[in-house]
Length: 324
Image 1: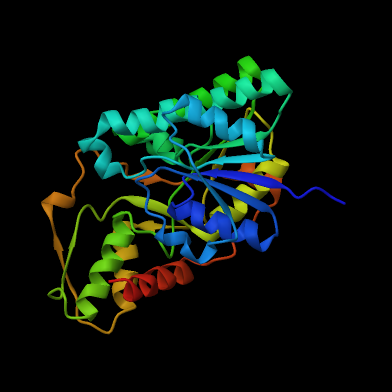
Image 2: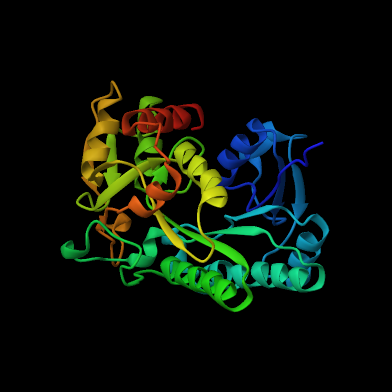
């Protein structure tokens, strides 16, 4: 009888993790999700009894070792992070500890288990397009060899995670694969990124819980959009088809400004909504050109996004309509 594939996902209650768990359960693969005691698990209530949940604090080395040594999954998807750029300015120490040191502790647990037992998994370390920071037009579309230029504490923490993953491949041959995923969104995303902020405000306006004035920050930044459901499909292909030690850009195929995205969301509503800039929503240093070259990943996997920008935004807005 063929052994069931076992996957371990850190940050199991997170936005992306919840969609990856949906995909793996659908594929009838075993899923072990790790979580901290403070973590909100509402996104995965529908998966009760379908995945195994185990407590694990990434900053606790003994906890990481205990979980890895006990379960020894075939694939590890390291998705846990402090992932909100805005909060990273308020809590830079927690952000960098979680994102960099947490990655170190996880990979050290894999190294120690490998040394003791020969255990040899594939580890997907989720870095971020934010590591590239503010790039000049001559470097767009952004390739994997674009210099790092982190512009916020979240990005600094992800640079650390990215480099720790490379270190564990070059020094210990832990099979790490790094992804630098560009903007991805969809239903269940609650972090107040621009599109979620806008969708939530529109949903509140439609229910007469907010006056018909939508507050916004910088509308000129350029983003390439992907659907989270496409993103997790990419991750599933990644661990099966991509090379350990390598980094891969992944992103969607629709590029527009934040302002154009906002106008599209407003057009999905019957309400007459006015726009108004809010200084509180302007970042101290904004990343304005996030356009990826994903050819390295596409050539390796043949991955093709299935969800259109229009479908993603419609589903995101509908989710907020049901959850405000």
